[in-house]
Length: 261
Image 1 (cartoon, rainbow, N blue to C red):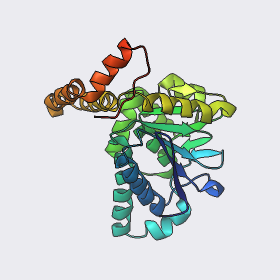
Image 2 (image 1 turned 90 degrees about the vertical axis):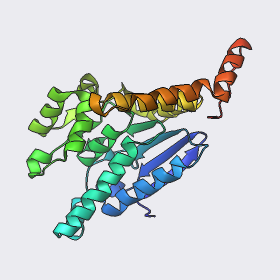
Image 3 (image 1 turned 60 degrees about the horizontal axis):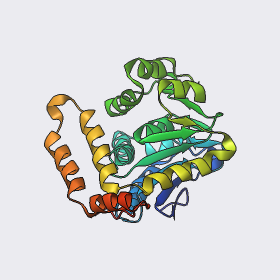
């Protein structure tokens, strides 16, 4: 594990923190690998029901790849292949994570940072946040998986605008595109996201998991959807102890205590 990546738990919420503030949380190969490892620990922790991804230092979520490391990390065809596989493992690990994920964004969310935020279920930012994918200014090719994930969030026209112009968009533009769910005053961001995470963590995990899985399947081409598995996930909700607890708590006018069983 690298000290450039931090993790902590606060009740049912796990925090994954990019900790390279002197470089606006630019991400190295080692940091991408650590992202996957932290996510796996959260996946296997039954107490964690929501994961928040954020950046340290107050000036950036993630500002993209650490270009200063390119000489060592992308110096050969083999190195490039390893780098691309490691980053995609991190992105797909967030995108396919079975529990809800929230990107808590303050400051720069650029390049790989925007790609990472795209992989989250929700994005909450401050008014001063900046978004962009500058690939067209660098001559970089962009993998179809990353473009598809962005297109699923903002639609094809805005996805093209983001790539074609390669410019930075402000928080209001990002909200208008549908990229961010909420724009929250800077001083309120942590508390707002914590409350959001606690609210989700207090709801029925099987219901949330089934809904998240259904959305992911419905975003696929119709020929690739596994609707039977979606139906099975719904059935698990109705067959669960949590369903009994939810009904009982409603009748008893109390807050339910869900266990994910």
